[in-house]
Amino acid sequence: MSWSEHDIGGLVRPDDGLVSPEIFHDRELFDFESRRLFMRTWLYVGHESQLRKRGDFISTYMGLNPVLVVRQNDGGTKVVLNACRHRGMKVCRADSGNTRAFTCTFHGWSYGLDGALNNVPMQQAAYGDALDRGKFGLVQVPRVETYKGLIFANFDEDAPSLPEYLGDMAWYLDALVDRREGGIEVLGGVHKIVHRGNWKMGAEQFAGDNYHAFLTHVSASMSWRDADHEADPNPLKPGFQYSSRAGHGLAGWRKNGMDDAPYVPSADYELVAQYYRDTAAEVRDRLGAERVDGPSLGAGNVFPNFSFLTRVFCHSSIGIWHPVTPDTFQYWRYCVVDKAAPAEVKRAIMNNMHVWPLGVADSDDGENWSEISANLIGPAVRDVPLNYQMGMGRGLRDHPRFPGIITESYVAEESHRNFYRRWREFMTSEKYPAIGADEPAIATSSSEGR
Ligand code: FES
Ligand code: FE
Image 1: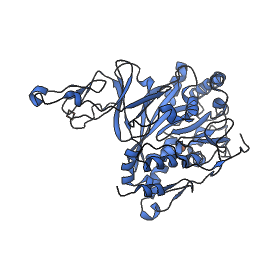
Image 2: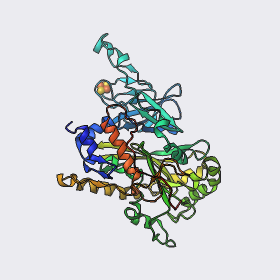
Image 3: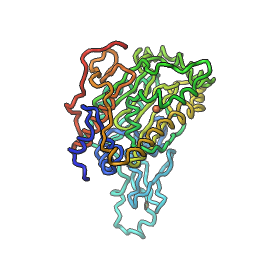
């Protein structure tokens, strides 16, 4: 590649709050990122509720690599490359399902659940004794670990364990995945949205961008309100931002939105809102008040590309920002719910997932990303760094109520700076990068407004 590691380091300057548009557009950087980042980070590949019995599988991607996540005969989970060892065809083209074998539709090589090459059509006539099937199974992804039902995989043998990688982000994830006994389950299939833009635009937004919502989503949010509810004249809500030197981030709202939610007035919405009110005391006992009344609502991103929404307008979901090209990504989103929720609550969520807020707010965000991508093509505009300076020096490390680096404001960009700090470490380090001494500026005392 023509970019040197020194150049890459210079594109992202979190201490100055500046990021070059090149990282969202350059083809060589994108190719380099597909190795340096996506071959070494823990990537979300599926949920255990999607793999209930042996032979159940999910087809997804780890970065640019197609993979299959497969429930094994012994109950374990393997992740294998979805690429035939003969000519590279996908051996499975379904999103999910149940099978006893993955048979390539090009020439018929057939692989077992564990990826072993079990059958080659006309093997004796075609190869004689020359083909050693034992050497041509589907390539296994070496690391697979789960966190409370969330399955992650990693190509890098040197990466830390998943709990170590998640760090204090696990505390926030619990407010989504561990509210009630049994955790969560995925409802229905996957929503796939193709966006023009770079995958990092979505990831950084979920890592902490409350700032866009009051304007970008104003028309959608007004359509969700009924005539009895005026638009909120003050867009600055009680809130906070969590960020981590590991690159994770979360934009939290600090109120229980179920109690004053004028959104999407409907019997189904009210049913789900009532469910969350009814379970609040149980969840408070289980997780503590902070994760019911604290980050009760919010968007988060586990570095690099796994995102989640926790009870935003009564809707919880998990999602992946899949890179496709420098200027294209796919956003895959799965609706999730407490496994212990009553059947009528699950039905109400399923009936309404396209409006809460799938299919409405997503198109607002997508328009921003596609407009930026079309706009920052010329060499002059790509030379001008973008401003990521909001809330510099206001992150707190020793917050009494929330773990991680906390900025006590509804709007901040500490998590964006940390996202790109970690991105730069991966991009400029040949070995798995330790979290460096390159610290964000940290305030020493807490301010008002908790
Ligand atoms: Fe799969 Fe030939 S490419 S059998
Ligand atoms: Fe948005």
